[in-house]
Length: 346
Image (cartoon, rainbow, N blue to C red):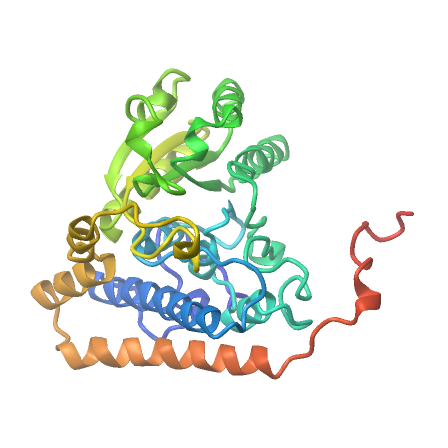
């Protein structure tokens, strides 16, 4: 898994590691469903591991936002790149990352993508276009812009997608990046996941206007979409990536969504209650996996047991990943200073 490329404009079954053909809308819907279920199973597993004290450090779960990562990555190729955030597991899995190596990394094991040194917020795998999750709010935005500059300079038709949250929309680096990307017509897509909260504060209390409107001042193509509708995200991402590949420059997509769990696991110890129960209940009814399941059952052939089998398969893959990680060794203390510099550097 994670070694085969995405065909332009479609989901690649090999990269997704699933046996569902994407030759028609039915197969595509099953692939999208399977990948969202894999992310959900992975995050629910992390939630349980954290509660048992088996994870080092904090984890920020992506539960409730799966449609954005899956919808956007479904139109990317292997040579396309993404930058991620502190809440990045979903982005990486949707791009084709191996859940075994991800789990090992998060659990601090040598078999992880970064040999256990990056942890939850700093996983990277250049071979499949993952330029890194990032613990710095907005930190991936300039990296993605630089990646797009390199593609433009070398005449490649690759695209880079910068995932970031509503909190990062207030960082000055976003405006600087949009300005340069527009001036140089760089092939980059700025994708804001607006989940309504900047850590523990309502985004509407600290963010003026509509986030999507901010790109219009710089001449970007801009759109606001339902971030819980995987097809709506996929449609917006298709338009943005096609524009970028054709030399039309950058786009800004604001995907409106909601994170069902806490900002980070264990936050209730110090944050207190800040979200109304009825608000969380409302968004649970708009769970992206639930909505997509309803879509499939209403318009496609498979019965509910087929979807249940897909969910069970994804949970089994994640259980295997946990077993793989637990059986892996922790890094030796002597390796702490390895991999800090490029080969041949002092």
